[in-house]
Image 1 (cartoon, rainbow, N blue to C red):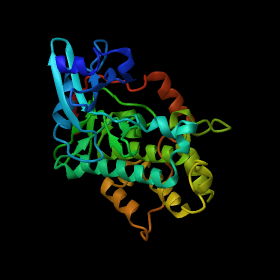
Image 2 (tube, rainbow, N blue to C red):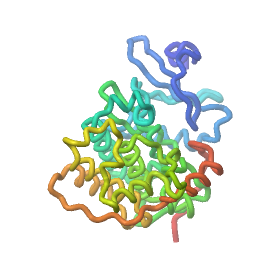
Image 3 (cartoon, helix red, strand yellow):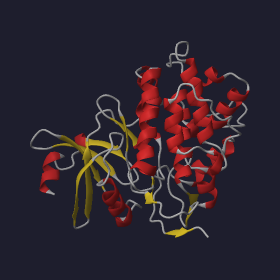
Image 4 (spheres, rainbow, N blue to C red):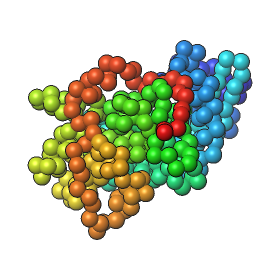
Length: 324
């Protein structure tokens, strides 16, 4: 505890770098010069000891370049803290949704980010020897290192998916609307395919530079997913892309990523690819991809309703039961 206090200058305001559902995040520097990030559980946070211990237990086992590395933790009295490697470039949303930040992300860098997030998610779903569902995958939970390498973070809501179940039902829906899959937002059912849907939303946001929950079509009839679908069906996929992307030289890769993004946000979970398939599609230049169908939650009123009825990054203790 004393080491963390010294590293963060007693949790000074100057060291505060972010605020999430868990609580504030502070930058710190250890006595040996190593920079750290300290997540401090807010006393008013809805995220309780269950989520905290969940994150500690899971993240300590992770070893992947696209997952944020945990360095330690502290539980003392009412204080609960997690110590992570420090990510100097903050989170992905600060880049892709900011005009100045977007200028720094050419298409090659965006493609590397999409691939990195996909590989990190594949590790969670399969390569870690467990099936771990993140349940709150979004751009603000993708942190960036010195080289803008993406790293998935914030595992307080993650759940180990065991057995041969097709889905698990949550009695309380947690996470962030705009990234939630239809089956989870409406029925509380989640599976690895729920993360795939969230990944698809992130891909479309990276391609367009627009946040799904903030997109407004001229006639207010559809959201960002709907816009991607309309332009795809009209054979105008490049009109969806951020102007900062190098459209002329990379059009085939851009179109492929748009198609993959649409495949990931299909309404029916069975129509979405696995993350193994996603990584294979991203890596294979000559592969013929399936034709996407109408995405789930493509209408604007879904986003409007959800934003009014759920706070951003809302978290609560969730009791899980197997689906019959």
